[in-house]
Image 1: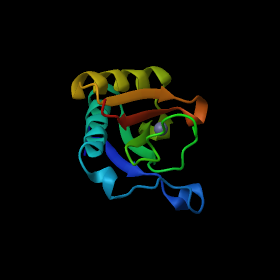
Image 2: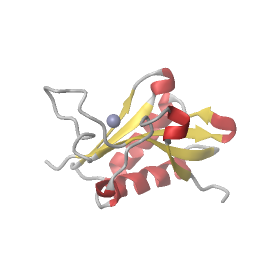
Image 3: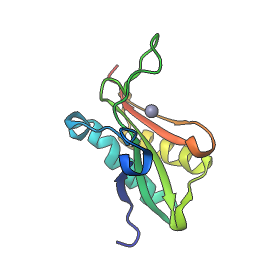
Length: 130
Ligand SMILES: [Zn+2]
């Protein structure tokens, strides 16, 4: 569908056994599913030639033992955006999408950040009720 963004999930086949995104039922319950839908809509609206919104991470063990890590609590997902020809979105495009989603879903219970560099550049989105 032209102008629409396909949502795909990083699989074990491409990433290596057990390295695909781990999604569980909680990821498809509101409000996390709202994050996914809002990010897809923002990507369609803002990123020219965007084709794929890829969920690269769902659950994983905490990498911040001292701090909060909402991946572990099934309340965070990571995304990458691919444009026509497999071209990755730029840092500026990720920032645009993050700011737009933050403004549209609008409430203080959601957080969006652009994380990483190079091939690891991604949007981290989480539901974090305050
Ligand atoms: Zn993350």
